[in-house]
Amino acid sequence: MAIPVEPTDRVTRLYILDFGLFRVHSGNRVIGICGYLIRTAAGRNILVDTGFPAKYHRDARAATLEDRLDSFGEIVSLTDENGLRQQLERAGLSPADVDCLILTHTHIDHVGGIGDFPHAPLVVGRAERACPRPLYWQGAQPLEWPDVATIPVEGDLDICQGLRLLSTPGHSPGHLSLLVTLPESGPILLTADAISRPAEIDERFAGFWDEAQAMASAERLLELAGACGATVIYGHWPEQWPTLRKAPAFYG
Image (cartoon, rainbow, N blue to C red; front, side):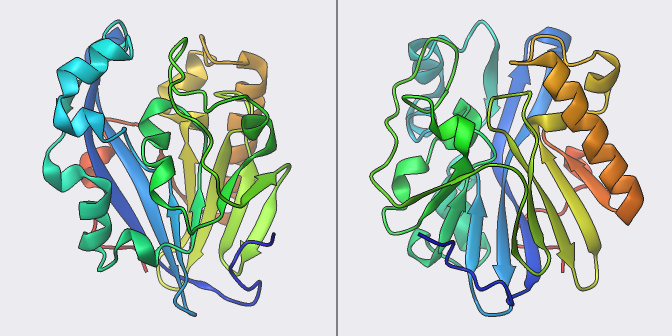
């Protein structure tokens, strides 16, 4: 199945979706959990990542313990307004309006709403989809792959004018980043967790799934950003998060 976006279509808007705040025990960092909504001139709506599972909205503490996430960190802020449906509503949409779901990777804070779009094709890195289940969190893998049309991506892929998927393995086996080029804002590089924060480069991505691949992916991304003059939006950089436009505001 092909991605339901015409190659001649073009990106017009980029929304950043605010899925709440999480404290990482290591370094005591409070990070934003985000997704992205990309809209095109032809009216297509492409969702990128889905935040934590709904059970974290019902009882974050119980869900954290159930998933054994407490050794890594804790939810700081997760209100109803940070829900997936509510964030889409801030951009004037409902889940039924999503034409395509792209997963940068399948860790717990990106894959929680994977089952909420039975009508939308799922775009995911081939190496990620080759896993029996979404990676989720260490030994806890409670989610199944949804029964939807799936488009596994290997290598880079131009989806339409202004939207390119970039293969950036290292943080996870099939990690994807995105280069979004907008009419007024110009090129914006969404690193996702390929570079969560700039300091990871000096730390040489210690503890990543594949540290050498992660370094190679990061170097490639920064070279690309420099070459095209892209604004870089990192996956979870505490210092950058408050400065970013959040839905209903957008980059156009």
